[in-house]
Image (cartoon, rainbow, N blue to C red; front, side, top):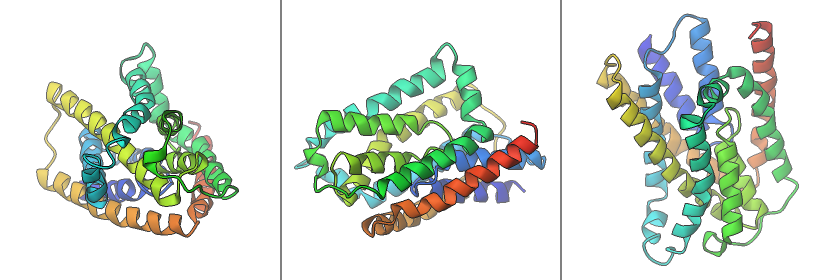
Length: 267
């Protein structure tokens, strides 16, 4: 059964990391469903790290030319990305080391919270359809705009809030072209995923758990990479066509269904 669980979570991670439907929200709901049917994931931290590595690789492959350009004509973007990363770092430290870290983690792992937040993501996406994108590029962003996009990324720590959706919509709102909003969003994800993965890896080294089959983990990583790359291509195509808000018609009903399930279960 572990194989099937890992494959399902890998597909969820690959799709949800890029499509504006919240990978964290879907993973929280998926894990809650497994637990309800007595199929608890034995090493969720290990699995989480590996699946995020898979989607990180998808970003690196898809944006490889743009990443190389950061060392040349796009080097002005580096300080913009640093500024945009600050809010997520502050929130991440509060979640991991703050005085109420345990309480925060409880909420971030709650399917009920995800149920409330999915419709919020839907409203964000629907709101984006009411505004035309700008003509700006990432290199033309102001530090204030980069910080606003970073705040949107930090807000997506809540399960059910899509990181890609929140950051792309904010990018469009501050005047970026559709393709440039997506580019800044996913380049901004790289330091966050790397930092979170490194931190979780240190936790694993400090407190190792029972060994899960390397084959199972490798397959999960590969699936999250392949599915993530396909989902990223899908997102860019739909974004170019102005269809970003269409994903609202998935997350809003999903949120209602999750809320009904959680409340009926007495959670």
